[in-house]
Image 1 (cartoon, rainbow, N blue to C red):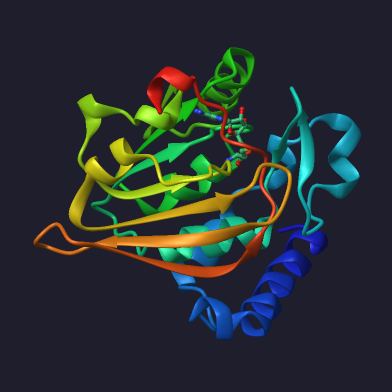
Image 2 (image 1 turned 45 degrees about the horizontal axis):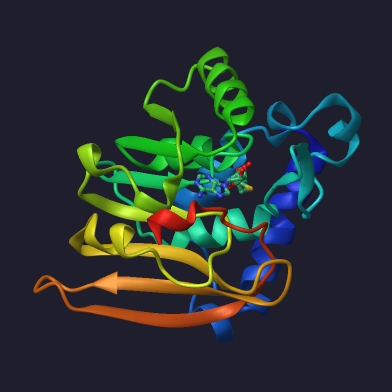
Length: 221
Ligand code: SAH
């Protein structure tokens, strides 16, 4: 592993400790940190951003979108409590980096991206890199992916002003969803939604975050 990559993992570990009082997670699961070590972020950024691939910050990926900050990727992944049997839905494929991390921890990853070009380039990239348990769809993820539901975990990597009801429906009893909720281009909170075995849901607000907006067709809302 490159030095910079090793350093990033250490930064994520110390940021986890700093934010533990908000997130409830002082240390991320070693399986999550192994996935963060295994997946090389340099493969998910364009050549002009290569020198910054292992910085702990978001980077532009075109179409006004960004690849998320690595600490946030690790945190959101950790909060899902995935097992090797989990079926996960991601809304907002972007570069495919978060999907690659999830694919190391779950059985199957379904990821939806509304920008056609990003869905295509992420699909090609993940295929070239040999990830074979990720399926990408070019669609508005606000309505989820009914045919592949229910999901053990749902991760939304764009900010909405409310939790999309279809996503709650498509979460299995006992499942977990992480989603940034708030005003576009302003303050948002990372929310954790859990669904009990009897279908009751609970939401918890964890910490302030900044995500690109979830863009949806009004007819879906
Ligand atoms: N997870 C990505 C980062 C995503 S940035 C990564 O690892 O690189 C958020 C992404 O959500 C953008 O690519 C944006 O186009 C997409 N997006 C926004 N609204 C969406 C929607 N309604 N459905 C699906 N994708 C959406």
